[in-house]
Structures are given as structure tokens and as C-alpha cells.
Image (cartoon, rainbow, N blue to C red; front, side, top):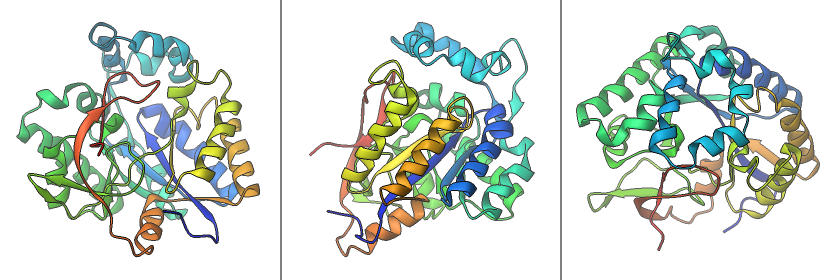
Amino acid sequence: MTAPTSAKLLGLRIDVDTHDGMKNGVPVLLDAFREAGVKGTFYLSMGPDNSGKAILNVLRRPGFLGKMRRTGAARVYGLRTVLSGTLLPARMIAVAFPGIARRIVAEGHEAGVHAWDHRRWQDKLPRLSENEVAAQLGRARQAFLDIFGETPRTFAAPAWFGDERALKIEEWYELGYASDCRGTEPFLPIVDGAALSTPQVPATLPTLDEALGDTHTEPRDFFASMLDAAASAAWPVLTVHAELEGGPYAADLRWFLERARERGIEPVPLRELLAARRTSGVPLPEHTMEYGTVPGRHGTVFMPRKI
């Protein structure tokens, strides 16, 4: 299955996980996208920045400390973020910067919900009750409504860590689509033996933080490989992070966007990638869900079950 021949589409997804990522990284990315003439889908963490609680993963998750070291997390995120929600109080993320959030939509990008409390969801989802899952999603949805004056049309689970309870709530919200998992192409998830009507548009390509110090030593080399991957994949989705590509690796992202244009690769919001997939005339595949691993990322992620 191939994308339309007029341009090679690349779904561009931007995750905003922290207070400083929203405050500083998002404006940098918006400037870069305006200069390159591209649009993307921004997924906003709405509530408290509890990034400092990630330190608990050093004890719980093998490989987490190694990842923090090889990606230079302390340098990338800064001491204030590293201590946020522990030794220092948590600061709010998108709700603290409604003007920046509205700028995203005003400049023609798509905005969706990433989380209310990103850290709580990522670390505790299996232990949350069904009511707590609903409360996390509902609170984020309401915060989005308060900022934009309309409900979100897309959700994306933090760290690609979702479950069937969340999928059912997203179905009830009548979203246009969600992006809760890793995979290879858009599909319909099967829950309780039946396909839902809310498509998943999975992230298909590796992320910079997964690659640095693992498969690649230099960010420019990583982005060069993503050009090749985007050109060869049927329905590619690249995820960038406001804290990384909107921070110390902003110049590398600009380099990528320039080379993408030269190669006829067009970054687009995920809704446009899904629309193009649907025009192919081939029904979306249906998959049950499972958990698996991806290279360079500690822990497990949500993904369609391998056939």
C-alpha cells in the first residue's frame, strides 16, 4: 500500500510533556514550521508537570537510568523540570499558557490532548481504577475545552501507553481519531470482539530520544535516517518533542525539514495522513491490541497485535 504519488506524506506529531516544553519549546517549533511551510499535530499535556517523579523509574524499570544518561536528560530538561513535582512544586503545562496553545491552532496546526497528568498516566495506568482513568481523560478534555472553546478531536496516550478502558472512553467522546500506540499504518482497534469506530494513527518511526546513544550518536545522522525511513514507509508518522527538537536539537529539526522538502516529503497533521489513507479505497485493517517493546525505549508500549 502506498501513499498518493503527488507528494510523499509524513505525519508530523509533536508531543508536549513539560512546563518548559510548552513555554519555550512550542514557540521555537512554531517558528521553525512557519519557516518551512509545514503543519503538524500538537499533543498537549494539560495539567501538572510531575516530571521529577520519573526518578522512581530508576528502581522500577531496568534500563531507565541508562536512557537518562545517554540522552543527557538533565541537560535537555533542566534542573527545574527534573525536580518538578518532588523537591519543587509541579507547574502547570498547557493550562498555564493558553495564548501559546491558541497560537498553535491560529497558525493552522492541529491540537489534541496528550494527558492531564502525563507522569501519573505513564507510570500508574495499570493501577488506576476505571473511574480514575475516566477522570484523567475527562479533566484533560475539559481543560482543552476551556482553552479552545471546543472539545478535542484527537487524543494521544502518554508514552504510547494506553489500554482498552481508555479506548472505550475515546470512543464515547466521538473523536476523529486517536494516536495511542506504535504501529505501521492507521487501523481500527478491536475491543471486546468488535472493531471500534475511532481509528488509531500510530507513530511508526523511532524518536530522537530512543535513538541517541543507541542506534545513533549524532542527531543529524538520526534525522538523515528518518528521511530514508519516511520515503520508504507506506504511512509514516514521526514524533518530535517540544523539549528536544524545540530545545537543543532545534537546528537539527530545521535541517530535517529542509531536506524533506528537497526530497518531496511533505509533513502534515495526522488528520491529513488519515484522510489520505482513507481515500485509497481500501478499508482500514482491524487489530486487537497488545503490549510490546521498541528499540531504545524502556518499558512497554501499546501496539496492534502481530498477525
